[in-house]
Length: 293
Image 1: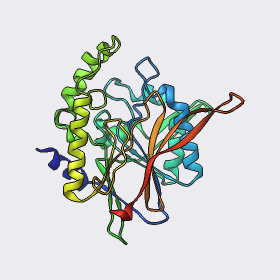
Image 2 (image 1 turned 30 degrees about the vertical axis):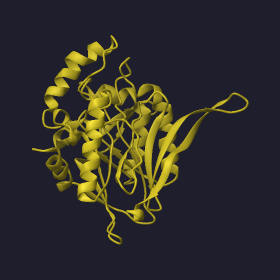
Image 3 (image 1 turned 90 degrees about the vertical axis):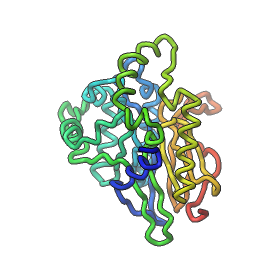
Image 4 (image 1 turned 45 degrees about the horizontal axis):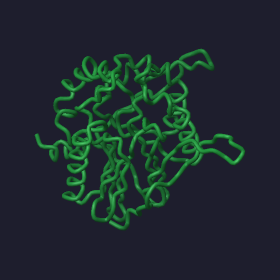
C-alpha cells in the first residue's frame, strides 16, 4: 500500500468536528510522555506544557492531540507514565470532562487504536492530591485522523499524525518498535541516534515532509500533522502544516485554530528585567487564514 493510500485510509475512519468562526482548537503532538527516566524527553518541558494547557483551558479551546502523546515504544507500562505525569493527565481529564478533548494515535502509541487497550488503561488515573483514583478519559476513542468540517465554505482541515508517509513507521511499525525498544534505546544513551526516526534522521524527515506536502497538494486539502517534530507553517502553494513537538530543548510548539485562522506558537521560558523567569507564548511565522486557500 502506498503512502497516499495509507493517508486516505486514515481519513476514512476520521472523527468529524465542526469548523466555524467561533471554533477554538489547539493542536499538540509528539509529547512522548515517558516514565521519568533519563530517556523521558517530555519531563524537562512538562512545566511549559502545563502552563499552555491552563491557558487553553481558561480560553475555551478544545484540545486535539495528534499522536505520540505517550511513549509506548520505549516503555511497556502506561501505568508508570500516568503516575509520573499525574498533573498533565489531571489537566487533560478536565478537558475531557467538558467534551473538549479528542486524540489521534501515532506510531509510538499505535496500540491505542485497540478499544480494549483504551478501556483498560485510560478510564482512570491516580490523583496524588486526593489519594484516590479519578476518571481520566472513560470510553475514549483514539482516531486515525480528524477532519475539521467546514459546512459553510467547504474549507475542511485534515489532521493526522503523519507516520503514514513512512512505511517502516506505519505498515511495519512492530519491527520499528522492536528496534527502538531493544536496539536504539540503549545505543541512544551512548549518543547514537535512531536512524529509523523521522525526527532524528534528517533524510527521512525531509522525505516524510515531502510526501505529506505532496498529498496535501494533490488532494487540495489543508493538512496538519506531527511526527517529524519540525514545526512548519504552510502557504497557499503548500497547504501542509506541522505542529512540532513537546520535546525540543528550546520549548514546546503548538498550532492554534481560531477565527478560521491557523497560528503556530511556541511556549518557552523568558526572563524579565528583574531576572525572574516566566513562561512566554510566542507566535512563529505568519498566521494563515483558512479562507485564503
